[in-house]
Length: 159
Image (cartoon, rainbow, N blue to C red; front, side, top):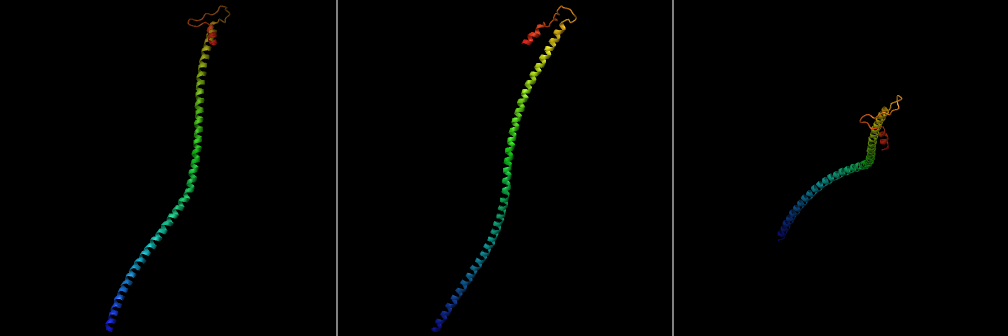
């Protein structure tokens, strides 16, 4: 009976050893899977670090470009204000030129009318002089037919 007991114990030890060996194999498989997953995670983390580095470099470049862009925008704003002020001055100057041109035109029309009036008066004066006989005769010269008497010039000047 002792031999049977030893055999049973040996069988149980053998079964336990087989179970332990199965467990060890299973643990090794899980460990291998974990190692592979860790390696994949490490590779992904490395890629993430690379992407983060690239993003950081891109952000640094953007930050470097922001300062000159901000300066350029400020300069454009100042130039735009200056151009607006200059345009307003040009508009004012053009308005003054237009007003002066209108005044000049009115004065030119008045001068032209005055010149016509002087021409007419000179013509009337010349006609009046022609009516006088300067050869020594004392008889007054009669106005020509259709002509106004010499007193007309004096009347026109009083008007």
